[in-house]
Length: 252
Length: 231
Image (cartoon, rainbow over the protein chains, first blue to last red):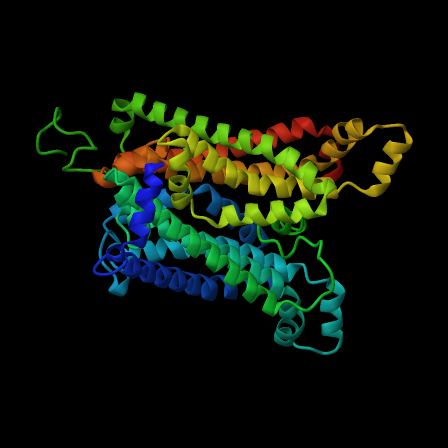
């Protein structure tokens, strides 16, 4: 348990937070990376998946991209990108060493949950709602914007929320391949046998992860229509297997 | 091809450093096999441990709604913690051992499996349950003979997700030197050894696909009644 005391000492020492490569700087760097990658993936993934969902095409791809994403280890992809000629370890603006490689990997890993959830969300809009919208003389765009999207929104947001968790986790792993971010504190600690430091880094990473999740859950509640009582629906639970697989059978 | 002639460096020498290299696989066969076996062992141990904990937890949660929300909340919280941070948090208790990795991975698998059990059991219709009770089935027989078999498709979907993601996450165990193929990836990055890195990465994906196929086949064998219905 001596390591726990070391970890506490590292956490409470102002010197480990400030200065070049201090935890404050690394934390900001990782947050910036996470939000940039999530933004890129949401812009790219949502536009493709919502459009495909509206057309009802490409279901097989949209569903299976999640299975592929799960099977590829984040560590392996990061490693491959860093060791390759391009992007390699080159620094990228404020994102630090191996910034470009990290950003590419993070965006790629954020895409599957966003695409799958958004696609399923639009497909799950009841057919009679879609038909009524058409019957009212709405154009394709109006159908999507006024009928499909509002109903699909809760599940779409769950996908983005799951992607946020995924991106933060992957951004931490980036440090294992010389990337930027707080994971550096953990890997440095472990590779140099300063276990207290490694555990301190892990505590900070875990707390920020929980904070992000709570913030995301709160943001999700904002976009959800008010409803009474506890919902037994699986739609709002981003970790539910059924959320993306049960309805997948019909389209795939 | 090489400067030093036929006996010179093979495709994995520092001069060439090719991604795909048969010589590397041939020369380091034992190392690769050991890493793969370790990877498989860690994955299977973690998923089995996850299953063993998830099943009673799901039964308990189903009985008591208050426990259900606690279980789901806590497991979501654990799932949120990045793997690279979860392993260090376990180290003070279990040290730099394979146990640390197995427990960490089992916690992630658990999150998915508890939900799969709950959703699977919930998908069994009340009429079927009533019919079984009417036939004089007790609680235990109802669970094992009626509810679990009917819940199997959803449970297996969860098990597949949990297994495939565990295979990928095991690589992170290389932080405490028990990462199976992840150890080779880590070494490949630090020594800029492309063949090692690429081979280990591909093997990870292959392992995930193989285990997934095994589970699908297992499910088909266990649920013969679903085979004709869909077609």
